[in-house]
Image (cartoon, rainbow, N blue to C red):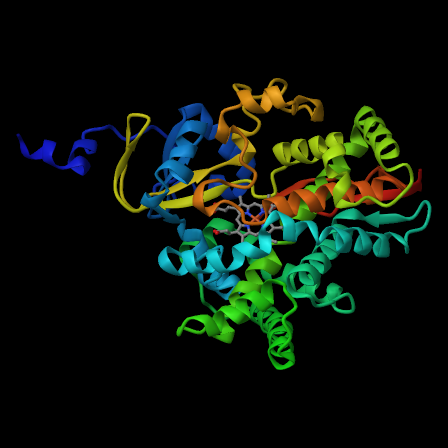
Length: 456
Ligand code: HEM
């Protein structure tokens, strides 16, 4: 046996590196990526399913084939950790070492602890809060009023996640929390890639604003934790579970760890859902035929009464709207991993420490899997279509062991909120208000989505 055959890594070293754009001698492709992120990740697919490039000194791969995505996220997930972008000081200050960012045994323990709060049965008990809070919001709406529906959805989903998972009502502070959170995620909206790579700690005004916002949000989070600790009550929610878990094994969760967990769920648990809802309203408003069918389903299933979890199974078309909105405008438009050990993918070599990115934005609009990919067509989501679709051609919630823990929570929330609002109101787009995409940490509307509220 020659030496190369006895070492799998050496064998894969014989595989060639994949093609890809070269970019600038120093920056690599960073400027192209920052200039037009969505266009750039779309154009790179022309090189093939596995594409290699350089961002400054980092080797980056873009992966476009659903089977390869499945291999990385699911089948061979052990060979990967989260990408470097999640380890930047900004991200660390934001969510620290919570469920989204931790690795190995620590992540396993956190996931085990949080899982019961996301069991279907428990989630179903949150439906009532979702509908009630939505009605509370819309009770203040007046006919012909212009609203930024993105802002409304952000506020509403934040209130819902805080109430359901932490049994705290922040309605008095929701605007403040929303403002502070959006301040905190700002660094990710500008020059995102530079930030990933340079790990910049300079005390610029933007950094100072970020740190101030971080302190403000910490105050609120620590207050929720302290209040619960001192009350000693078991509310049966996620926070109680996390607090109780401290006593079970010797290694108690510190307030700092709890803070990271709470912040993670604050963030991961509201913005993505708010974005799906915002884009859904935008798409519904632009497609009168979809709107007509949506309203017809609500009238037939609900017959004027408030929606409940029990209606979910009959709100099929509304669910299709949710799925199709997440296909065209996936809030998480890309997921990233870092390779631990060199491996081979599609006949190409992928060295250790390469950063791998998979883009819902591109794969979910790939004409190999979706007919008329740019069309908003909820009807495509039949059971038969779903069965035939390669599993990772559509992955708004990621997949494998690190898949979204809140997928069912989110789907329920999206369907119930669409139903509660759509049952009473029609939202039409404000003419002359351009809606444009801002691919920051998530896929946001750059200047909100302005709608005119009409009674139905
Ligand atoms: C439409 C709504 C949502 C979308 C599109 C979404 C998307 C995602 C994606 C793509 C991931 C995987 C990231 C990766 O693989 O690197 C993820 C993870 C996660 N999501 Fe969601 N999410 C949504 C709603 C929620 C909600 C409602 C919650 C909680 C209430 C939540 C909590 C989390 C957490 C904690 C993780 C990390 C899980 C782990 O690593 O164990 N998400 N989400």
